[in-house]
Length: 242
Image 1 (cartoon, rainbow, N blue to C red):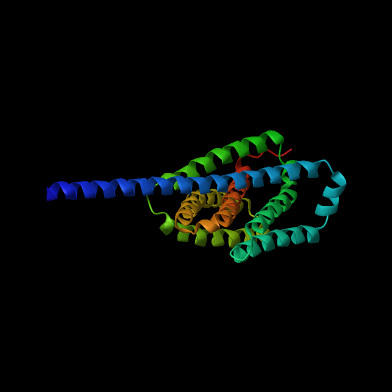
Image 2: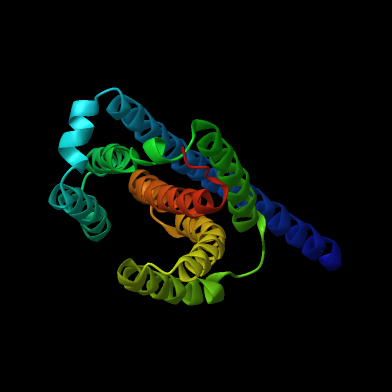
């Protein structure tokens, strides 16, 4: 009888654990849907902004005829990302989301020149390749049981190295070095997509439910940046100039 009771209790505990695990999986999946939803809206805002900018040659000329205005635009974008990342705990969910979409719109402005440099077909092709690559890596990051945190530290260091190399090459304009930088950029952001996805998933499972909205916004910003950078580096390989 004691053995039967023990087996029953063990079976009950196992069933309860399985139910809790399933509930957690559904909860995390719900958070990730919000992440991807906000990210998608951010990409749409970027694309729409670029499209509207193309219809205003005068505005394009005013913004991009001066190096100073380009640096100001870049500084504002960088400031938004830094501010949002640093103040996310103190911002309301609505404010954080609004700042993310504001960044997406500004990024649409800064990316407009690529539509003047590359053909529409090559941009569309590169976007499709980027979407497929991003989709495969974010799925891998979500479902894998491997701990990707070890490669995450390496990728962050590699990213800083990539930025330094890109800045140096601004002065030397070495074509071969630029090709190597582009190859490294693709590999780094492919890895970051998987790592960031796993990190967002883990954060969603461990964070307080009141933080869901903010996690969704920061997760969307993180994956948005991965997608945009991967697209830009791939464009250097698949983009055909007008």
